[in-house]
Amino acid sequence: MPARKPTKTPQVTPENGEDISWQAQKSAMTRDRILDAAINCFITLGYTNVTTAKVASTAGVSRGAMLHHFPSKTELIQAAVEYLHNKLLEDYTARVNKIPKTRKGKSRRRAGLDAYWDYLIGDLAVAYHELCVAGRTDPELHSILENSSAKFDLHVRETNAELFQEWSGRGDRFLLAMDVTRFMMEGMAVGQLTESLEDRIPMLLDYLADRLEEIFEEGDSTAIARHAAKK
Image (cartoon, rainbow, N blue to C red; front, side, top):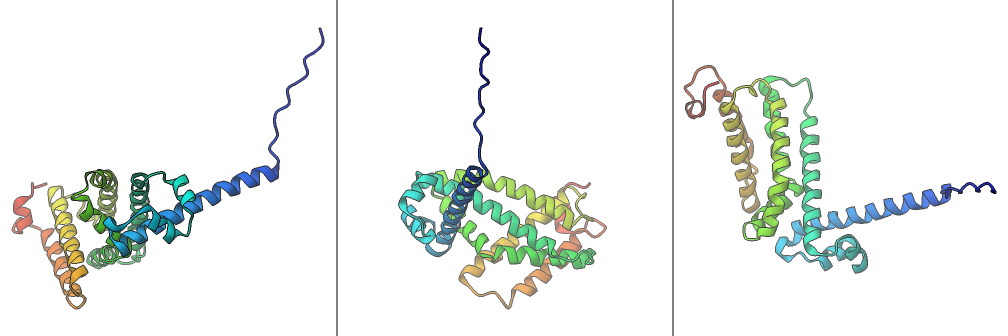
């Protein structure tokens, strides 16, 4: 019986491999360009005025390329929210990491407030706020935002535990203090959208920083201490 000839394994040439790799990179670049355009449209047009056609035009891609990556507006919005979420994480982390390691104690905590404020008034956070407002009456968008925000909130808490490490083991007192900080500063950021608060922001942040220091002073005389479980 004649011996069976060995089966030849198809070979991928360097040229083919490079071509496949380039095509994948090109596709990823086009996808990111579309998502960047979607975020830009959220900022400049508002969520309700965003269409796939406007996003495609802003991105400079054809309708066919848009449909290839995102066959429906729902898929585009879902991907854009996830993309924005990752950008927000990168932006917030980068701002916090710029705080010099030499700054300690109250000085470092105050710098943390400044970093969070700069993050809140950045274009990315403005886009996210626009989506949150739209999500109030759009159940589908609300669901998409709800899934992504939980991951971001966890990241912020972990970052705060590092920034305010002297306080992070104080249980409910720490959580309440962080919530007071977050909601006060987010309210300031929303107010900034309709009224110039530039001259008042430093004073408000100084006030908040002082109140935080008081919250964690020894004793239980502060308002938050009275409403938090003692640890």
